[in-house]
Length: 251
Ligand code: NDP
Ligand code: 8X3
Image 1 (cartoon, rainbow, N blue to C red):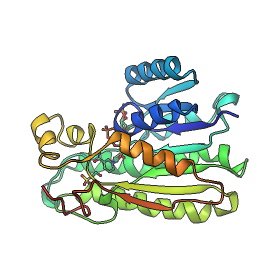
Image 2 (image 1 turned 45 degrees about the vertical axis):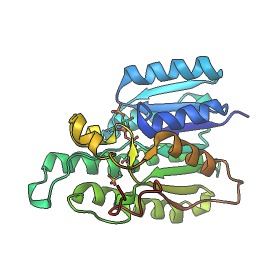
Image 3 (image 1 turned 90 degrees about the vertical axis):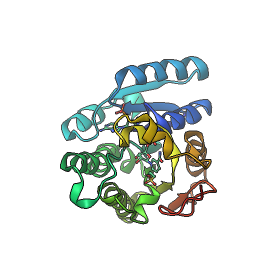
């Protein structure tokens, strides 16, 4: 039977690459994000290229009502979700605590933390009923270690780490796997978003070393999802070779 994956934040970066990877392997994909035009284009591309089915859903993971409206009553053929990838997320700004912008903090917490909680809560009934499923949460090295001027983002990713542990415990009776992937620096649209469109600042983040790329995270996600029923990778920290942790990068 064809497997189904639901990926949040599939309009760019890791999420898009994950959709491409799983589609190429014959999975049907539910792709979500706020940018409808990008999701539509990706859906058309994947369906044409791989002869699989794609359901694009447009919603903001911060908006509780939108999340449940989009996910609660999925068409019958889309309900047996095998893998949920909670990937949608962002950083906004790199400022010291006293200078940080309150709206940036709100958006990061609402997206990275509450977004995962809402989406997971909406999708879980499709997994608990079948006692089957795999939740993959996109954390970060920023969820393992706090770095200078990373306050709000680091806090949000520490919360992803904690939520992943909490899910793993509470969902044991349902045999649902929970994997947290914690990437280091990866060149996607992440830094363009963080620095609010400042292309030079964004580019400088990756100057002087070879970072991770979206396809690397897609391959790792695919590996985690493909393991036998009795194996679950719980926690996976992955950096490029030039990076040791959230603080040390050899440039
Ligand atoms: P990108 O900016 O390239 O992609 C982010 C994705 O998240 C987009 O598809 C965006 O879609 C979606 N998204 C953001 N906010 C919302 C929202 N409120 N509602 C719905 N979708 C949203 O970044 P990455 O691919 O790099 O990031 C993906 C995840 O990986 C994030 O959680 C990030 O924190 C994490 N991460 C990234 C690292 C990196 O260095 N790149 C390293 C470690 C972790 P749209 O704008 O269309 O809504
Ligand atoms: C993204 C990587 O190091 O900018 O989570 O926090 S980092």
